[in-house]
Image (cartoon, rainbow over the protein chains, first blue to last red):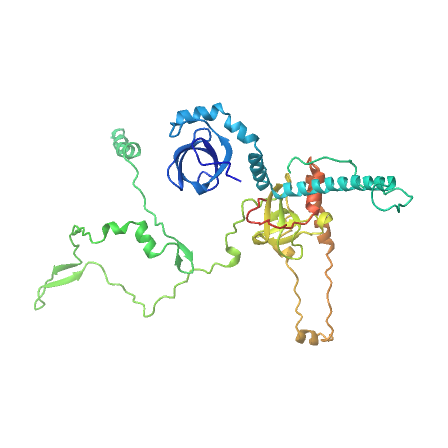
Length: 166
Length: 272
């Protein structure tokens, strides 16, 4: 498969390392094999050179001629609504979730784990009841089925109460 | 003349108070740490005082006119030279034959050390115990004793951790805080109260007491009535404070549950 993303004028990249880690930049010019001139008027990054191995290329690309001045880059950035689009992307959301996880305190972790226990119990209960039903109907497993109905599930809520932090 | 005199006296006194700046009083920056050790070494003080600026510089001292120590006196009489040199000040009358025994600076004993407790360890903080038989439990910090040890409680009903002392080294303080309000530790809960009563188990002692030296009796710890009442008193306050919170149910579960690390969880990367 050929490459889909190139280091090219307008390419938006996430800085993966260094002082600007976690910020979005847009490539303005390619200096040489290892470096590029980048600018980030929408993310508070000064126009500067950066090593390519510090960049992770995103799927976004802004439209402007190469070596465009910052004001042109800014206009392209705002016109493309890059910040909003980035925030919506799965990549950014994963990063945000990671950050959220890292910020959790010990008590938060406990709350999360107890919420998961609750959810998993509910899920298992539902699954088991479905299993029994299917077995009775003869669409699943062996025909041997006890006459007595399966034990009532232990949980109170039936299903799908996911914790906010996941 | 009475009136002009006070005026004249007041004038010179008022002038320095208003316009003339105060003379700086120099105080040594170095100080004694005890045991004859000073805070800053000679080298450090060399830099602090910026003595390097004056290395090699010569500042000729204005020579003070020497005060005469002797006076030549004329004396009368014959055949005695006519003069005598007399010391203005009398010689000392006592010269010690031995050096004085100086008092050495005191040893700073452990009990006098300054205790610095980590700032997040305030009464009401939930802590994770890292050592001892209750390691891994989440407990509530009740206070800090003068010995620098933390006083924690389970509460006992939650996780079977009694009122107990523990060094702050063996504790992770979490950001979870229980508002204990104006709860005050009873004054008798001090370090002596928690000190273990160590009895000698030496064989020679046992023999003297006529005990069988080969029988190893294990003494079971039984908390005294006093301890039980104190435990109750402190726990009551803590549990009450927990009950006031909106998340009391989860918090109770939290204190009941033990702390543990999962895979790829590193305590130095976690927030507590």
